[in-house]
Length: 303
Image (cartoon, rainbow, N blue to C red):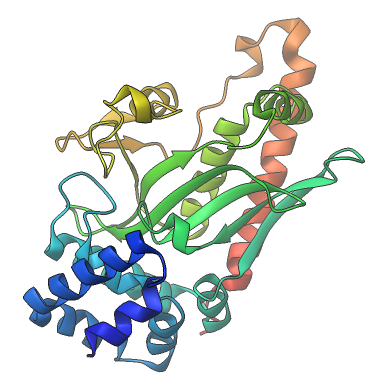
């Protein structure tokens, strides 16, 4: 493999910062040439994997940089990349893979809003800007492609050798008047927070893919470990939110295990005056669940 030519596909050499990263990438590839060769062999084993690596060469960059979670090793990153694509090539059809790693989006669900916002929708996509925390992303976005919330994840085996979803990050809106936007969407979702909605969608995707577990990085496990610095503080405390949603810590303090299904209150637990709101909310969530399941089935291999 020509590391210089590969690096040119990944980095903008006219950008001084990108040029520096290009040089570091080439050096790291040379120092780990055997490992990169193994990753290259993995993506060369089938036509569809070769096409994925051609369209999304960032899989080679991801192996060389400290991405995904805190203190990940070169070997661990290669292993999770290979397991992610092993699962997808076995479970999903070629059109889904080519669209996901060719800059496209796969539709999961949508809901109309007002004349200004038009609609919001859930999609699965993968863009180069999401490469630090995962190999795919579930995005709640507006009709103008403005992301509201997104969860970056990858699929890999856990310690019990079960394919599981691993969430690398949860990101909120980065737009003007984001608080007002969230209020509008929360009201539209019957007082259900959009932050919870994106996690609910991730759980629905995991179930539709028959994954056995969901794990998510903690504040400690965040790949850059930069949330300690006040000037780059995370907008969302991962650990607090995972715990709030029923997550429990595992032996590796970099991760929480999350439930595959959200725990719902029974109507007996809900005050009488709020039952109508909860009923509409549950109907909406059931609609989302059914739409995601149906669309994921359409993306699966036919054999």
